[in-house]
Amino acid sequence: MKKYYLLFLKGIGVGIANIIPGVSGGTIALITGIFETIIDSIKSFNLQALKLLFTGKFKEFIEHTNLYFLMAVFGGAFSGIFALSFVLGSLFENYPKFVWAFFFGLIIASVYFVAKKIKKWNVGVIVSLIVGTLIAVLIINVFDPAAENSSYFYLFICGIVATCSMILPGLSGSFILILMGNYELVMIHSVKNLDFHVLVPLMFGAGFGLIAFSHVLSWVFKKFKDQTIAMLSGFIMGSLTLLWPWKEEITKQFGTGDKIKEKVIGYNWSYPASFTFEEIFAVSLIVIGFLSIWLLEKYAVDE
Image (cartoon, rainbow, N blue to C red):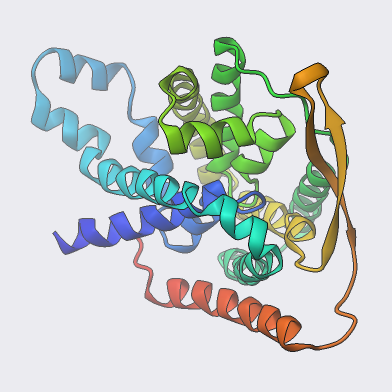
């Protein structure tokens, strides 16, 4: 029972990370030692699993899919998402610098501890690290957000794309939703108000994307483990530009008529002009964020 309680707590961390733009739940999963098990467990939902389910072999189905593990992790993840959706808007509105500072510390530590898992450095690994970093920087700094779209098909596609990025360490599913124009619709309004007209097609897309993408990611992770970890480390490193606490938002209006919305399309970065109490507190939160990942790494147990 203790094992599943710990998995539930790790799942909460994954869920909380997924709802913060710029932070990836996959990063937390990798740091806490459950990333590869999640991918392999999701991949096990195949024709054999369906056969076991529809022939009434429920015990075999549970063992084949590692169902209790997934229930504990995803139960924690959904709990984290729902809990944070109620306070996220207020936190970002009133204390944006402090929120970014804490997560900046988390991600700095994540780069180090994820890259530390690489067993052998070579040219291919270094190239993978550079490519991963460039991809993340381009996604964050080049592409403009789309307009909000609540059609069922578009929400299905959002579910596929965002969930695939959510399980990739360093690529934020929430930030992908921002680029696709549906972050506020999905992560704030729909989750908070349980709007199933939005959540159901999104969840179908998420389920489809998870199962399909897990096969590819599992194969790549096993065949090219060091290169994959290096690229994931690059994704995480590239996301640091989004999380830097001292920045001003660059906004742009999208839509027409009553549906005009202002979205963040970039940032002007700066450094603390002076070390007031507010700046010192922000720096302290960076340190606390770093130490949080250090503690996770210290006490995480591979499943």
